[in-house]
Length: 131
Ligand code: HEC
Image 1 (cartoon, helix red, strand yellow):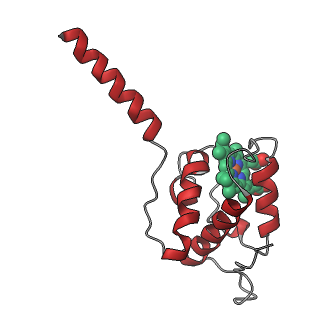
Image 2 (image 1 turned 30 degrees about the horizontal axis):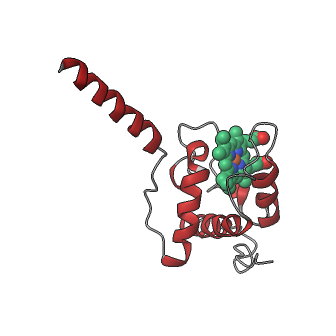
């Protein structure tokens, strides 16, 4: 019986390990929910909940450094597909449409966090990346 119990607890810890990707903590409007989901499936293990990068090896993406003017949608797509020295390529983990949704979600989150470039408001957050 003791033996049986320890098997159960191993089983439970294994389940826990597989389900403990950081969860989103922020509620986003409907159009960004898909992107949020994809981000949390694929990116949040490294980039943290809500892309805030706490306690993680990868940078916080909700940061001025990654606003559209500094780091374009195409740049993000390129990184996701091909990675960098330190980030493994995610080509196999996301489709092109999913990347589009993730970018939309990231742009929304940057705006929601109040990040905007001083010189322009209008074009800083672009979501028109359907190609
Ligand atoms: C296995 C961990 C891991 C995963 C998964 C991951 N990243 Fe990264 N990412 C990193 C690391 C580490 C860096 C820092 C890379 C560097 O400095 O070269 C990074 C950097 C980036 C950068 C900035 C690159 C730069 O030049 O500043 C972007 C944008 C990015 N990741 C987006 C994403 C997105 C979107 C996803 C999900 C589709 C994702 N990453 C998934 C680890 C990861």
